[in-house]
Amino acid sequence: MLPGFVTARRFISTSTPFTQRLKQTENEIVKMFRLPDSQEENHYVPMEGRRVLRKDPNARKLDERFIRILKIFKWGPDAEKALEVLKLKLDIRLVREVLKIDVEVHVKIQFFKWAGKKRNFEHDSTTYMALIRCLDENRLVGELWRTIQDMVKSPCAIGPSELSEIVKILGRVKMVNKALSIFYQVKGRKCRPTAGTYNSVILMLMQEGHHEKVHELYNEMCSEGHCFPDTVTYSALISAFGKLNRDDSAVRLFDEMKENGLQPTAKIYTTLMGIYFKLGKVEEALNLVHEMRMRRCVPTVYTYTELIRGLGKSGRVEDAYGVYKNMLKDGCKPDVVLMNNLINILGRSDRLKEAVELFEEMRLLNCTPNVVTYNTIIKSLFEDKAPPSEASSWLERMKKDGVVPSSFTYSILIDGFCKTNRVEKALLLLEEMDEKGFPPCPAAYCSLINSLGKAKRYEAANELFQELKENCGSSSVRVYAVMIKHFGKCGRFNEAMGLFNEMKKLGCIPDVYAYNALITGMVRADMMDEAFSLFRTMEENGCNPDINSHNIILNGLARTGGPKRAMEMFAKMKSSTIKPDAVSYNTVLGCLSRAGLFEEATKLMKEMNSKGFEYDLITYSSILEAVGKVDEDRNMAES
Image 1 (cartoon, one colour):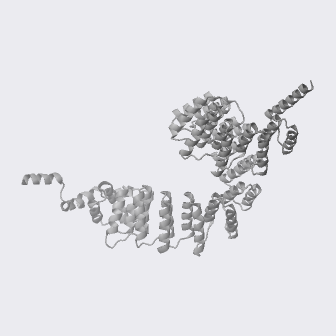
Image 2 (cartoon, one colour):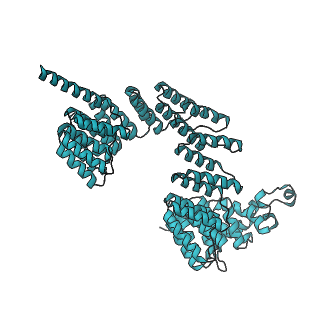
Image 3 (cartoon, helix red, strand yellow):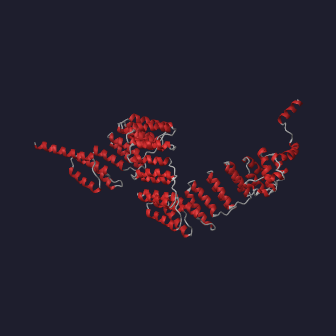
């Protein structure tokens, strides 16, 4: 038994006991990591970051020997002994230096914890922050949070700048509630926050979309009595109020800022400009540009982008283009976002040629077009009724230039080809989209299903609809609405009703398009009572009927209920918020003509003209047909 026991013991531990290794540590390890001799030292050029450490013997030893020991032996008994042998005094400076060096982060954590347990040593805020930065850099979120908690619980003082940094770090790792908790803990016991500290919290809240909390913090900051909002605070607040659509509050803060003697930054002017454009106050937005120049605040590319976007939405396309030209004169280089906005504005304003010229100009400005730029041009081509082959050529050019088409690129092309009756080409693009691994795009499917339905290829439309459901697990409300509409058109009302109920079961809340699609099917099936009932149900469910909803019912009444009921609903529409449009007038006019009520029809025609509406070809044909029928009846009576 005894020999076996000895063998087992040797098998478990064949190294020399630790006490016997002390001599080896003192002699061999120290020699192994010895410093260069004086002759070598003359040729030694320290790294830039270590020039300060050269004057300090302890730091020098740390750089040369102790670092190597930590790298080879990690942290443990050998490293502890080396610390003793090399006579490195454990103090705050040493801990900070160890946490800076290039060794494994877990070695640093072990060393930090070991140091904190030693007698006559306490970590201060600088050592805690050094470790926190290491943990943040290595994304060790759990250890990071524990270290911050330990720091807050410890007796060490925490300054405003350190609290700001902790908040920023926790914000970056999406620990917003924990950051707020730390802020209030430290504020209550250890630290008097400055404007900069509050700004760190405010900016973190802004980045995470907690805009309501920002104003609360601002009020808290103002009530402190010792720190006041600065330009960073006002910038964040104005931006937050803009996102919350509290535009009056944003404008008031802007005025308050100037009254307090603070100079607004270009970012603040740009934010307020966007608010004015959103409110339709174009002149006020332009006055801000003048004020910027008066105050010598140089507009940035973001300012110019906001100006161009705002002017474009206001229909002032020429002014938007003029801003771009002036920007170039002022020496401000456009970025791809600005160019995309301007190309979009020109494309939507039937100025496709200029949009394409601007695209070509981007190369000269060293501004590389991206996928959005190409998408904008392709969309503009379809809207300008350009030949579909041009859109295809831009897709090929896009690929050749190394720009990868997005799912939106394919969606634009599929929709464009569907609208130009190139359904087969659109189907090929859907296959290509699938081959490239893009997830199914409901918008692309919607366009194809609608086009196939219009071509009375109902089975093919239904097949695509089922494919989308299988691939996505469900489908969008709009796709359901399109399929319901086409089932109703081809007389498959039960299937249309089934889809409507299926959609509700899946949690897709029907929108006005879905309701209109089913009501249309009911009207086609002469189910006017059911159509009226669904019309009322949509209102009860909080889905307000639009002009199309009213016109669908009006058309049904005109066909089945005769002119009296149609005129009653028409009168109700005129006294409601949904006023009759050209379709409404034409529907009633056709109904009156078919009933031979020419006197009422004549009055309605005059009313239509006064409203600026024109009768369509179908209505005009029905009037002529009715007049011809009356003449025919009169001739027969006379003969």
